[in-house]
Length: 65
Image (cartoon, rainbow, N blue to C red; front, side, top):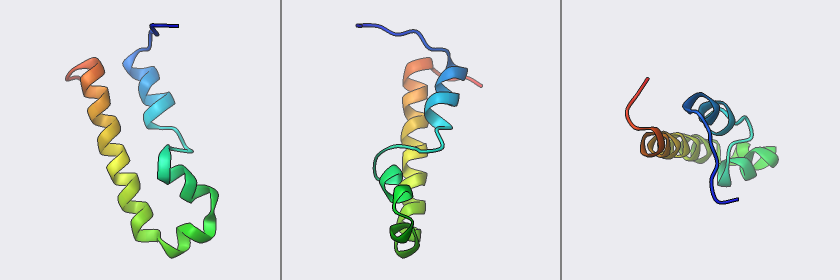
């Protein structure tokens, strides 16, 4: 598959609002002990990921809602 079609709303629901998240945030959520130890780091990682995904949304869909 070379191309997909996704709306901005689908992107937000499937990617941005993904309860498992991605990368280090997902790994830390799977290990609750790690989350307790690195709670501040987990918050920072989650914030940074949110910023990155919002930038991806802007690149894909342009300015909007």
